[in-house]
Length: 102
Image (cartoon, rainbow, N blue to C red; front, side, top):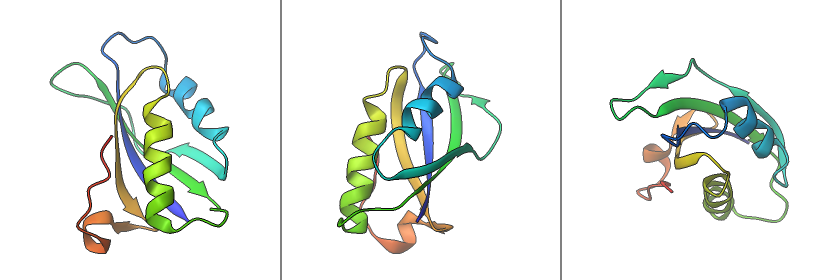
């Protein structure tokens, strides 16, 4: 399953995007984590980047895993906000009314 997450980094610039990606790669079930687009700077000064996270869930329903994935990524040092925006190329809003923002 391919999930696109949008990451908003801390204003303190404690860690870099590659550091965050390395942390995501060690999450259970994650096979690949790659940068999907160039890093953008938000009006508030945060770095914003879309990452493709490919994973193989083990005995977990899709929405349960998205919830877990979002919460685990949010705990990574330097990450302020995580937003799941696509699942297998389809906007999350087309799949469910639930918003996966952490």
